[in-house]
Length: 423
Image (cartoon, rainbow, N blue to C red; front, side, top):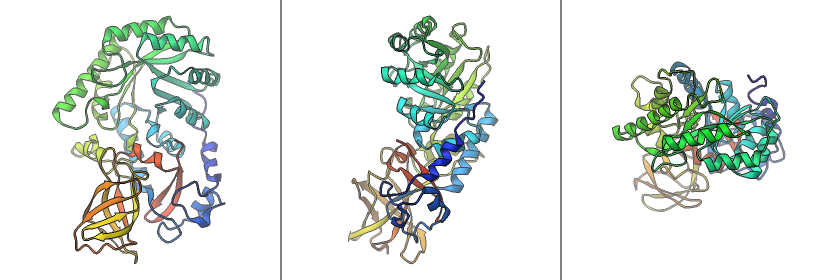
C-alpha cells in the first residue's frame, strides 16, 4: 500500500513561479518577466488586457463539471480510473484528476513517465511496451523509491527477454500486464496461446512480475454503430477470457484488468465489472473526458449517447481574429495547424465577437487550415469584419494541448488560471 501523496502538490504549485515571457504564445507583453502566479492574480481580461491571437483557452466551469462527472460515473459503475495523461501533459490537471479520486495516471512513453515523476506522481501505468535500454535503466533507478508504483505492458517473449536482460536485478520486479491485441489492431498478443507463452516468460523472469492483463479497444472502431460496438464487445470478451485463463499465472493477489479510451468506456466498464471467479482491479484509462470536445468525442461519447446521462461539456475553445476579407463569403482567420487540432475534424466556428465587445452566434464553416490560416466560409452578407474575434470549438483534445505550453483558464472572459503543459 502506498503511503506517499499521489502527486507532489508543492511541485505543482511551483508552476506559479515560472517566468512568463516570449516562449508562451498569446500572453500579454506587459506580463513578461513576471510569474505565472502574478499574471493570474491580476485576473486579466482575455480581450482587454493585452492577449494576442490566436489563443486556446480552457473553460473553468466545464473543466470542473467534467472532472466531477467522470469521478461520479466511475464510482457508480465500480471501476477505478487511471486517466491517460498524454491528452494534456499538464500536472496541474493531473493533480485535479487525482483529487477527484483517480487511482493513477496513464502514460504512453517513458519520456512522459519522466514528466510524471518530476511531479512525483505515485502510481503510473505505461500503456506500452518498454524495451528501450536507457529507459529501462532509468526506471530501475526510479524503483528505488518504494512508494512509486509502476506497471507496463508486454506482448511478446522477445520483449520479456529484452527487459530481463537490461534490468538485471532491479530494486524490485517491474509489474507487467500481458497486452491483448486483435487482428488489424495495434500492439498486443494476437491470440491466447501467444499471450500464455508471454505470461509464462514473465513468470520465469527475475526482473518482472505478472500483475494482470490490459489492452485498448479504441483502435478497433471509430463510431457508435451497432457493428462497431459489437467489435468492441468481442474484444473485451477476449480480454476477460484471457484474464481467467491466466488466473493461476498471476503473481499478485488482485490482478489489474484494464482497457478503455474515451469513446467506449461504458462497454469497458460493463465488461470489467461483470462477476469474476477471483478478485480483480478493473481500471479504466479514459483521458479526453477532462476537456471533452466539439467534434469526435461529442459524437461518440457514451454520456452523449445515453438517455438521461449527464454529458461532458466542451472545455476547449480557440479564439482567432479575422485578418482578411478578400472576397464575399470568405474570411481568413489567424489560426492554423500550428494552433488547433485537425486530425479528427476541423475547428467549428461558433461565435463572433465584434470590436465593440458584442458577441453573437456565427453560422459559418472552416473549410481548410494552412499552417497559420483558417479559411472561413460564411454568408456573403455576414457582417464579420477584419479585426473581429471568432470563437471556435475544437475536436480531439489530444492534438490541441501539444501546441500550447501555457493555456489560460477562463471564467467568462476573465483569466483565473494558467495551465502549463510539458510535451
